[in-house]
Length: 430
Image (cartoon, rainbow, N blue to C red; front, side):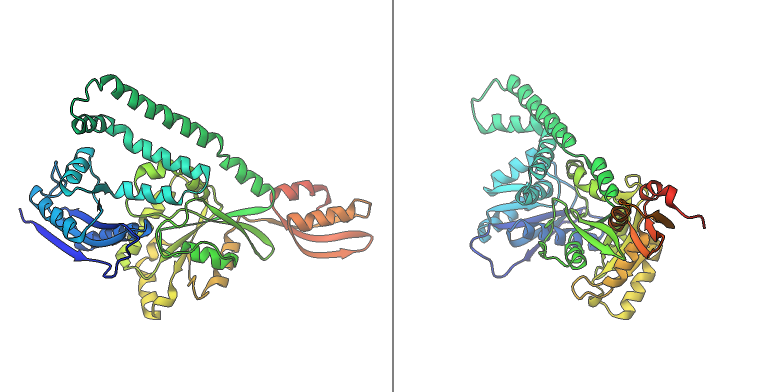
């Protein structure tokens, strides 16, 4: 078996206010080098999002070690790296058992966490609403639940003479289970996604949800479409709680929602905990899938496949419009080559640049065309005390293409089925 250890210096100028950390990634010996590099790059972005100062990265190719995840001989090198760089924390890209966390932290004399715990830290820091905070707590408890025995065993090891944990062990596990049940009940009780969707439809709004990987430019595109400044930063997970704004095109009203971004291998506990947030995507009429076209073709394809897998079986007949973002970073030849390479994975698409505004008018028109179809008809409203209020109501609830006043009020309108049914007796036969 061959071993490879690599130290990568990072962030040459480091701020004293930020915690200094070291990233660690163990690669399987037969794994793809490009994929490994991408995963390490994403871990570095996650660390940046958590406002850590990355001092270096430690990479090793080998099968996992039960005690340390990386080879036991390489832990000594990691210890030296921690000391020489004065690192306060070590973050592994690989999932760690409680025993591995304990063993490595004892050797390195600093805190050790894995990728899931890092994501949890980011989500906890960004959670501003009660609902988001409950979702983070749920994910954390679900992470702890299968590890209760290992946690208490390490507590026993850490505190010599601390005996009689058997009863407490059962109580600790039961307390976690009860808290999980209470949080789930509270999240379910306060959700109301279906009723909210129905209410919005009744008010004449169609629902459009932005989806896609973090840093694909979702929030920047959202800001450009609604022409309103929102939180846009060059880091992962700037959006946890959905942000919704109104958008109108050709008199059709849409509610545009920016949602939490996908990342590679997003832990299923996070998907479960943030289900209500993702429902903003699953319950939409149109999904606006944002893709970073500056990525390599194989990365674009993989992200498209994963995104469609997330949608499959969860959406209710939503149309998927793909916004091929960051057009301004590519030549015409590169755009053509990449569009041909991913053509089998996209149907309705448009090339845009959220920053420069290129293609945004075309995108808005495309969204309008993909909205649920409204019926168009001509109606005749008899003159009466209520006729003008009826006209005003139709302007609010639909699209008035023409109006003519005479012995009666003739109108050509376009509206959703509920409105057409209400004015049914007034509809003129074609």
